Image 1 (cartoon, helix red, strand yellow):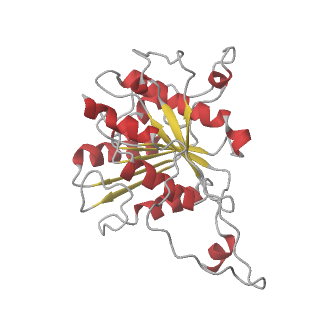
Image 2 (cartoon, rainbow, N blue to C red):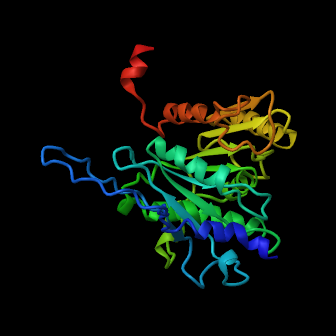
Length: 298
């Protein structure tokens, strides 16, 4: 049971931690001459956590420990790159753990390179919590990002959601009820829209629509998987067909070779270009700025 808490403790360690290298002190050097100028120190961005609900108000909670209180970990891009867009990153892990590295921090840092503020989601897991709780966490995450949009200088109409494996599996259920918030809610966050502006399913099963689910107003959706990973590739192909028939915007990439759980794909020849393909999709759908000069030369 102790190992069950490790993923959450790993996430908690992201909050405000700065690691300083220690070792043998370097030899003292002579002070530089007045004529030389040193570059100004670069202030690093520090990761921190934002709870989805205040303590004691989490819906469907079965306790009040670390596993009962979902939260977002903030990864901000350098100030000179920040473009006002944001994304929620839901790592996978079979709903019993969270793959914070390859499907969390690595992805957030790549988004930061694109100028996007990333929020890694720690959602509630099995066997204590089921799909209903995870769906509530997904919707609330979108609302929380919009609640902080003004202070963080983010566009509330450019909030994406990307899910890996089980993290992708939680998106489809919460999208069935995502939309305008509760106008009369006493909680200001609950009044905000919970529908993301775009979705990305990364080897995260989507499948057929639920009864009564409308796809015609679905946000732009990007999907990627390995063909051999049939538990993910076939549902993604089905969902792509359903979205296309409904008139929604969708893009699907199925790689001939590969496996489940390839993360960012960097360094893997089978699918190392999927994140650049996602970047292109986001530029074409207006969720990342384009280099107009480069586009004009094509």
